[in-house]
Length: 193
Image (cartoon, rainbow, N blue to C red; front, side, top):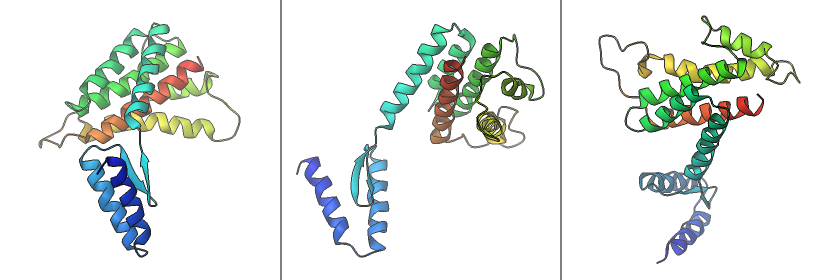
Protein backbone atom coordinates (compact mmCIF):
# COMPACT_ATOMS: atom_id res chain seq x y z
CA UNK A 1 0.00 0.00 0.00
CA UNK A 2 0.83 3.66 -0.08
CA UNK A 3 3.00 4.98 2.78
CA UNK A 4 0.07 6.90 4.21
CA UNK A 5 -1.89 3.63 4.49
CA UNK A 6 0.99 1.96 6.32
CA UNK A 7 1.14 4.88 8.76
CA UNK A 8 -2.64 4.61 9.31
CA UNK A 9 -2.30 0.86 9.90
CA UNK A 10 0.47 1.39 12.47
CA UNK A 11 -1.60 3.99 14.34
CA UNK A 12 -4.67 1.70 14.33
CA UNK A 13 -2.67 -1.34 15.45
CA UNK A 14 -1.21 0.70 18.34
CA UNK A 15 -4.73 1.39 19.67
CA UNK A 16 -5.47 -2.35 19.74
CA UNK A 17 -2.47 -3.23 21.92
CA UNK A 18 -2.59 -3.73 25.67
CA UNK A 19 -0.85 -1.25 27.94
CA UNK A 20 2.87 -1.99 28.02
CA UNK A 21 2.85 -3.80 24.70
CA UNK A 22 1.93 -0.52 23.01
CA UNK A 23 5.16 1.06 24.29
CA UNK A 24 7.23 -1.92 23.13
CA UNK A 25 5.59 -1.67 19.72
CA UNK A 26 6.27 2.09 19.57
CA UNK A 27 9.95 1.57 20.43
CA UNK A 28 10.29 -1.13 17.77
CA UNK A 29 8.58 0.95 15.08
CA UNK A 30 10.65 4.03 15.91
CA UNK A 31 13.82 1.94 15.71
CA UNK A 32 12.77 0.78 12.23
CA UNK A 33 11.93 4.35 11.18
CA UNK A 34 15.29 5.58 12.46
CA UNK A 35 17.33 2.79 10.88
CA UNK A 36 15.77 3.61 7.49
CA UNK A 37 16.28 7.38 7.93
CA UNK A 38 12.53 7.94 7.91
CA UNK A 39 11.36 11.36 9.10
CA UNK A 40 8.47 9.68 10.98
CA UNK A 41 8.24 8.69 14.63
CA UNK A 42 5.37 7.06 16.50
CA UNK A 43 4.61 9.12 19.60
CA UNK A 44 1.80 7.91 21.88
CA UNK A 45 0.32 6.04 18.96
CA UNK A 46 0.37 8.97 16.55
CA UNK A 47 2.76 9.14 13.61
CA UNK A 48 4.57 12.48 13.59
CA UNK A 49 6.85 13.71 10.82
CA UNK A 50 9.99 15.19 12.35
CA UNK A 51 11.65 17.75 10.13
CA UNK A 52 14.92 18.12 12.02
CA UNK A 53 16.99 18.28 8.83
CA UNK A 54 14.96 21.27 7.69
CA UNK A 55 15.25 22.94 11.09
CA UNK A 56 19.01 22.25 11.18
CA UNK A 57 19.34 23.74 7.71
CA UNK A 58 17.37 26.86 8.67
CA UNK A 59 19.38 27.40 11.85
CA UNK A 60 22.74 26.89 10.17
CA UNK A 61 21.85 29.22 7.31
CA UNK A 62 20.82 31.89 9.80
CA UNK A 63 24.26 31.59 11.42
CA UNK A 64 25.98 32.00 8.05
CA UNK A 65 23.85 35.05 7.23
CA UNK A 66 24.45 36.73 10.59
CA UNK A 67 28.18 36.02 10.72
CA UNK A 68 28.59 37.25 7.14
CA UNK A 69 26.60 40.42 7.79
CA UNK A 70 28.72 41.25 10.83
CA UNK A 71 31.91 40.34 8.97
CA UNK A 72 32.97 37.89 11.67
CA UNK A 73 35.18 36.00 9.23
CA UNK A 74 36.99 33.87 11.81
CA UNK A 75 33.73 32.66 13.35
CA UNK A 76 32.23 32.09 9.92
CA UNK A 77 35.20 29.98 8.81
CA UNK A 78 35.17 27.93 12.01
CA UNK A 79 31.43 27.30 11.81
CA UNK A 80 31.78 26.29 8.15
CA UNK A 81 34.63 23.94 9.10
CA UNK A 82 32.45 22.38 11.81
CA UNK A 83 29.63 21.76 9.37
CA UNK A 84 32.03 20.33 6.76
CA UNK A 85 33.66 17.96 9.27
CA UNK A 86 30.33 16.60 10.57
CA UNK A 87 30.08 12.92 9.77
CA UNK A 88 33.65 12.52 8.54
CA UNK A 89 35.64 13.89 11.51
CA UNK A 90 33.30 14.46 14.45
CA UNK A 91 36.17 15.45 16.75
CA UNK A 92 37.05 18.27 14.40
CA UNK A 93 33.38 19.24 14.05
CA UNK A 94 33.06 19.61 17.85
CA UNK A 95 36.33 21.55 18.09
CA UNK A 96 35.43 23.94 15.28
CA UNK A 97 31.89 24.54 16.62
CA UNK A 98 33.37 25.40 20.02
CA UNK A 99 35.93 27.68 18.41
CA UNK A 100 33.15 29.44 16.49
CA UNK A 101 31.40 30.31 19.77
CA UNK A 102 34.60 31.62 21.33
CA UNK A 103 35.39 33.69 18.24
CA UNK A 104 31.87 35.11 18.17
CA UNK A 105 32.08 36.09 21.84
CA UNK A 106 35.45 37.73 21.20
CA UNK A 107 33.92 39.68 18.29
CA UNK A 108 30.81 40.86 20.13
CA UNK A 109 32.98 41.95 23.07
CA UNK A 110 35.30 43.86 20.74
CA UNK A 111 38.40 41.95 21.80
CA UNK A 112 41.28 40.73 19.66
CA UNK A 113 41.79 37.29 21.23
CA UNK A 114 40.14 34.85 23.62
CA UNK A 115 41.14 35.77 27.19
CA UNK A 116 42.87 33.07 29.24
CA UNK A 117 41.43 31.14 32.16
CA UNK A 118 37.71 31.24 31.40
CA UNK A 119 37.64 35.03 31.65
CA UNK A 120 35.63 35.14 28.43
CA UNK A 121 32.40 34.19 30.26
CA UNK A 122 33.01 36.67 33.04
CA UNK A 123 33.53 39.37 30.40
CA UNK A 124 30.37 38.25 28.58
CA UNK A 125 28.30 38.32 31.78
CA UNK A 126 29.55 41.85 32.52
CA UNK A 127 29.00 43.07 28.96
CA UNK A 128 25.27 43.76 29.18
CA UNK A 129 24.58 41.52 26.16
CA UNK A 130 22.81 38.96 28.32
CA UNK A 131 19.53 39.75 30.08
CA UNK A 132 19.53 40.24 33.83
CA UNK A 133 15.81 39.80 34.41
CA UNK A 134 16.04 37.11 37.03
CA UNK A 135 18.59 35.74 39.43
CA UNK A 136 20.62 32.83 38.14
CA UNK A 137 19.80 33.22 34.44
CA UNK A 138 23.31 34.39 33.56
CA UNK A 139 24.90 31.50 35.43
CA UNK A 140 22.61 29.02 33.67
CA UNK A 141 23.26 30.57 30.27
CA UNK A 142 26.99 30.55 30.96
CA UNK A 143 26.69 26.87 31.88
CA UNK A 144 25.10 26.18 28.47
CA UNK A 145 27.91 28.04 26.71
CA UNK A 146 30.49 26.16 28.75
CA UNK A 147 28.83 22.81 28.02
CA UNK A 148 29.75 23.16 24.36
CA UNK A 149 33.33 24.04 25.21
CA UNK A 150 33.54 21.27 27.81
CA UNK A 151 32.42 18.73 25.21
CA UNK A 152 35.42 19.75 23.13
CA UNK A 153 37.71 19.32 26.14
CA UNK A 154 36.66 15.74 26.93
CA UNK A 155 39.27 13.08 26.12
CA UNK A 156 36.94 11.44 23.59
CA UNK A 157 36.85 14.68 21.60
CA UNK A 158 40.65 14.59 21.37
CA UNK A 159 41.29 18.33 21.52
CA UNK A 160 44.01 17.75 24.13
CA UNK A 161 45.35 14.50 22.74
CA UNK A 162 44.13 10.95 23.13
CA UNK A 163 46.96 9.55 25.20
CA UNK A 164 48.18 5.99 24.86
CA UNK A 165 45.02 4.45 23.41
CA UNK A 166 43.09 5.49 20.33
CA UNK A 167 39.73 6.72 21.55
CA UNK A 168 36.51 6.08 19.66
CA UNK A 169 35.22 8.86 17.44
CA UNK A 170 32.48 10.97 19.07
CA UNK A 171 29.10 10.05 17.64
CA UNK A 172 27.52 11.90 14.75
CA UNK A 173 24.58 12.75 17.01
CA UNK A 174 26.82 14.37 19.62
CA UNK A 175 28.72 16.38 17.03
CA UNK A 176 25.46 17.47 15.39
CA UNK A 177 24.06 18.48 18.79
CA UNK A 178 27.18 20.56 19.56
CA UNK A 179 26.98 22.28 16.15
CA UNK A 180 23.28 23.06 16.56
CA UNK A 181 23.73 24.29 20.13
CA UNK A 182 26.65 26.42 18.94
CA UNK A 183 24.50 27.80 16.14
CA UNK A 184 21.73 28.73 18.59
CA UNK A 185 24.21 30.47 20.88
CA UNK A 186 25.81 32.36 17.99
CA UNK A 187 22.42 33.52 16.69
CA UNK A 188 21.47 34.69 20.18
CA UNK A 189 24.74 36.57 20.70
CA UNK A 190 24.68 38.32 17.35
CA UNK A 191 21.02 39.31 17.65
CA UNK A 192 21.80 40.93 21.00
CA UNK A 193 25.05 42.52 19.78
